[in-house]
Length: 111
Length: 354
Image 1 (cartoon, rainbow over the protein chains, first blue to last red):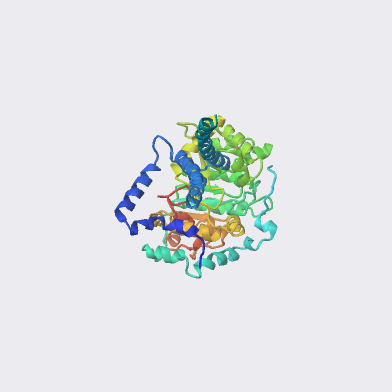
Image 2 (cartoon, each protein chain N blue to C red; image 1 turned 90 degrees about the horizontal axis):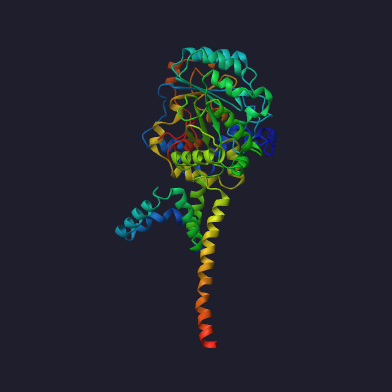
């Protein structure tokens, strides 16, 4: 028996979420498909954004899917890693910028 | 010549150098256990009990397996060590067929077809037949490999050859990884020399197309998106032009099969191909309008079947006894590698098919 919460095979079952709630599931997949179509951003640019967010969300399914998607679109490994650094920089920046709250509190309480 | 890191399967005396071992691998494992359906079962489910040819449109002739490059995924297992070369006698037999066949496209391939000592003679003679589309699959680096090849662009132009060349990526790193160190820079030089005499330029009748195949165990993305990205990058970085990009799926044979097995990607890759099976692609699969001729004159349903030693299922199975009517009645030979041509938007030597 598989005792891991994550199973790579589950990625292929993503579409089956509509089985328990068809209407909302269908709406989600319509939306998802539209989001990734060519628009003012190319599908390639969107794929790189998705890869970066997949890392900040730490979603193994999404990392699997968008690494594969990027390779198919000719994205280089250097481009992929730069995208992940963008995500990481925002993630760490988001943590650090909150330190202004800490500083404000320290200054108020401790002079 | 590029620094050679990869050796052909033949040179390594790999078990996969033998076609029967490749076919055995493709018939066993997940296809034997029934985890994945065989290609025969899959197409039968789409209404094709037998795969039959349509009218012959493309005659693809392999002039030999010798090549100045050793690419990591070569389905021919080509390289400098390969000695199989078409003789002038077989070329004469081919010319007789070209004159009388209904094919509108002649497609010369290899190895590096230019390395055949009778290549130029054959092109000159075949060009006289006045075939509509005369393709030479040139690997580009051959044009810069030796002084005797420097004038190839002019030779191609003189005979109105449609040049089709592989370039796996617009960056040096990804190209050299697949095709050998130094290949990218030489390919760029060769593309510039072709552009300089009009090949690939907008509005030019001198056709220059590029072939893209993925660098690893994944399928190509949308062909027109890739063409746009290739065009933009090559124009911006090198002021290079070309006409069309053909996106080809890697078929699980020869060195690519070896890579899939060695990297533990075989089952996942086959699953990807099977899941991406597109019945519409079966209608236009290239073996239905193409015949492949090997360096020694045998006939095959396609270049991939040639490499798997699967000769056509017909009494007319050699260029010496070519009978177009008999060949149109044959059943096309298939195995699990055929999933590569029916996945997604389909794949052929001319790019996507759907």
